[in-house]
Image (cartoon, rainbow, N blue to C red; front, side):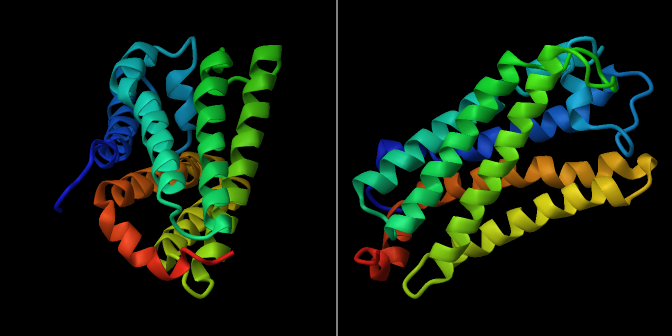
Length: 222
């Protein structure tokens, strides 16, 4: 790509955060004797009392920071270039707010014990953050789908948003529908939905001018 600016290069942060999170999910169980990825949640690996906490923090060190960097740069890029419709930009802004709440909220209120019932104020706040993240994720993805499938919209991003939303619903429904021994499998659909979609937006940012060309008909859209 010609004339790639510095902000476009920051789109790679979206890919890095996905790789960092994936590495933490795959390798942290090595430091957690008895951990069963098929039945246990990913959050059990990063709980305060989890034996895998240190390894998790090391492997996921780039995840939170790079996700914030990626979304800040995406927001700046689409606002400066007036990319897409107002509805599209609103969806991206809402998704960026979700990313910020996820990073700050989970850092402030980590789970105290892995695999433990929710009883303390800290654990309740962890669940409140989770609820906010889920609701904002769904709202932003729905908005991006509506904006993308409209005439002149960014259809490819709408498709990715639909896939991410489907993964979230598979995880949410599956966690209630499948036997407990398979809880961890369907739960991973939900946790990777947002991480994966952030990587998608980072990739579009990295492409830069290709994104603008693909959205040219939508620049005057409402």
